[in-house]
Length: 339
Image (tube, one colour):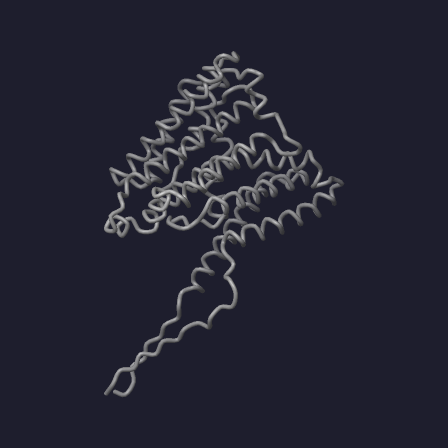
């Protein structure tokens, strides 16, 4: 008797398969068209310079944090401390500046140094103590939340007018803050695509043990991802200070930047398990949320319904990505015959 193995392979695909990033930007185009139609029904022009500026402004804060969140998720981790880092840096910079132009540099340096230190602690705990990023950064977030609640009862500090111009200046309809965010995104894309540690980050996120056995030092990419994530959350805090002119202990948590940044990353096609995704997709996810929020604000949609819409979009997106991944697996059937 002989055993026969029968393999059934899927038919060859014609042309290039549409990537997750491609899907994100197709969805963004659909959302923009739908938003323009809905805005027109309310008697507003979606493509007016003021509205475009408002949408781009909405992408800036979340964009900074989502770019950093992309890095830690690619490494197979998470960062839930980002809203508290954002609040803390806005306060530290505001108090240090105290409304004086001469203190702007000191305020920026202090804020970003503290943010980077927090990220370093997160990264060391995750990389060397093998504590999952969810737990490590949740604990750090609680520590920062307690510190903020104990030491700041309300807004504090003051940003000088020259610093506030960063949040108020536009080049045409494009805010300067959005250009800075896009510049940071470009640098991170270069880091991931053109540097060894960027390639190692993907390897560690894909399979840490295999990366280690291949000779990759698995700790440095994880630490780097957490440091950059907190650093970018600190930049977001500085931008909030520039817009509000004062630091706030609750501005980060009120914005829900921890969950919203994760949602934008997932919507952009990055896999939560790590090792697959890119910053460009994340920017598309951020833009989708910004357009949706803008349209729903114009239509005066109930805030609770806004969350329902966001949640539905996230679930549908993840379902589509999961189905695409399943369909790409080769079919294989084994039959034994002739017994």
